[in-house]
Amino acid sequence: MMNFFKKNKPIHILAPMSGKIIPLEEVDDKAFSEKRLGEGIAIEITDGKVIAPFDGEITSTYKSNHCVVIRSEEGIELLIHVGLETIKLKGEGFTQHVALMQEVKQGDVILEADLEFLKEKRKSLISPIIITNTGRIESIEKADGVAEKGQSNIMTVTLKKSKY
Image (tube, rainbow, N blue to C red; front, side, top):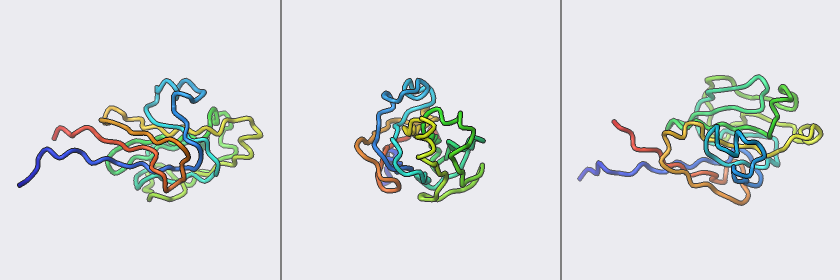
């Protein structure tokens, strides 16, 4: 018998970076703490290599190299933003390894940050990881504790049932 009412299976988002998980509400930047950009978590990054949390496509890059948006095969748009107010560094301390519309595989290094440089410049290493298209999301379960990049599941997302 076919089951037409099967629930959308949860999508696990792996940590793109290692460090302590911090609730978004506690991030010292209102755009993130008030969830103006979307829902998610932040990680206090301890290792400057940032990896793709899933297979997908880079849908936004920034000249300042401090963040990227990657879209999963299921259509989740994930903003990975390294540090707070790091846009003011105009790219200094960051190396971007991806281009717009580039396909990436889970585990590929997408950007690198020089954490010592960021500390010297007195930038917070708290790095928000945000689902920007929350309208498509039914629910998000967020992890806490310490994230190990490429290994820890930081968010479990269930998409709304499609109307088709």
